[in-house]
Length: 80
Image (cartoon, rainbow, N blue to C red; front, side):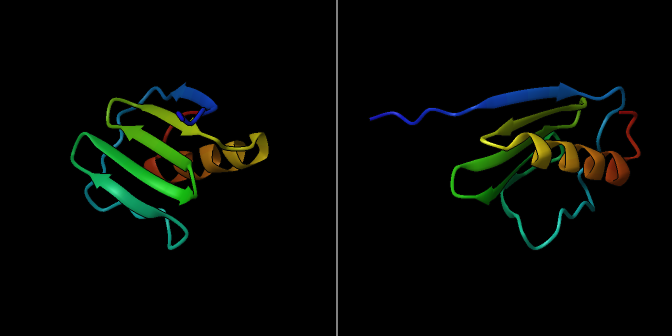
């Protein structure tokens, strides 16, 4: 049986650089390259970050997404 994912994508106006980034202990890093960063927050709850400014949330509640968008904006000095 396949799993269904609720996906939401956002695009920021600036590139993201992942070299020395840390999202905290609550996340498990699944993939970390210069081009993309994939982390798991909880069972089947993921964030896919791409260096060209796109972020995809899988299975995140609206309030959690808004808080994480603000966090990412602060970490990467992005325009929200």
